[in-house]
Image 1 (tube, helix red, strand yellow):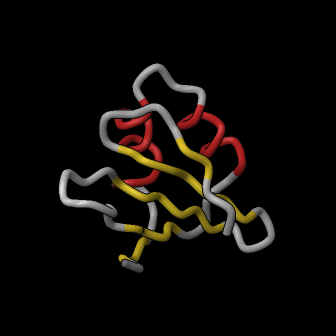
Image 2 (cartoon, helix red, strand yellow):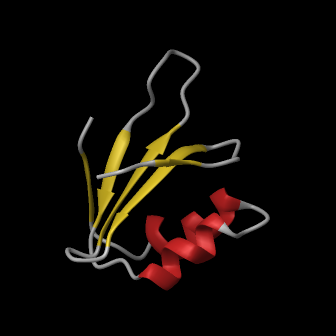
Length: 74
């Protein structure tokens, strides 16, 4: 999945596959590469809302973190 770098204090990059409705979020880490999580049943609108938000972390928490099934990939 292609990942897009974002300007956020918490998130490093976001990837989205509309065919599977899966979203990947890589978090920032002070110790190198951050953790990568996969979220299920995500819409393009939710991804766009995160990417275009003034506070990406706040919108991520409101839309994906507490409302979607997820798993840690790395």
